[in-house]
Image 1 (cartoon, one colour):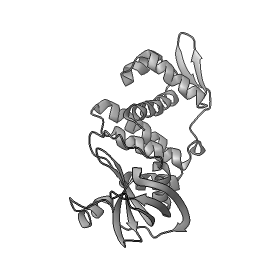
Image 2 (cartoon, helix red, strand yellow):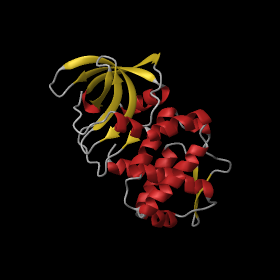
Image 3 (cartoon, one colour):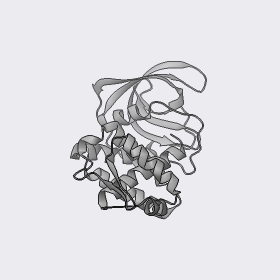
Image 4 (tube, one colour):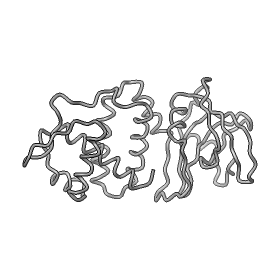
Length: 237
């Protein structure tokens, strides 16, 4: 997911909240609020319609939602809710304070419709995710959603991993947290092979399998982990 995708996802979520909280809203109002062109808003509304949101157009007046439509808890799967939480953390790095405020308010309203168990997982994921400023990575991963679920559900992961020396190994790990650097996504996990916490670069994970077996949650915050374990030159595993 690049920065443009993240920005659009955040805007779509915020537009949906605007539609739910106002009887009518115009493309001009939305373009002004989100500092984009009306043409961009037209595309965003079309994207919402294609996603199944019943947006109605009142000619000459603006957009409204079909009467009675609300975001129900079942609208978001766990992976979808996790994606929104991840986008929120990235948006918080945006330098436009008004944009950050609008998106954070939108996410708070989305969280409000989640079941309590989903809220607990969302809050855990927020605590277990850390971002560096000015993210500009070329290396990608196809496993973030699966790893997020393993973190919040305490599922062991079985991975095939290639280290910086191009040596491959099979690891059984207890995923703890996700973090980004300016170049890579990193997974912090307890490695049962090494018997300690290690960093795993996501682009070096060749294969990943979520196990049915659960592990006992590591009873510490991400900051406590850094205070206790992290050293400036800790090598990648």
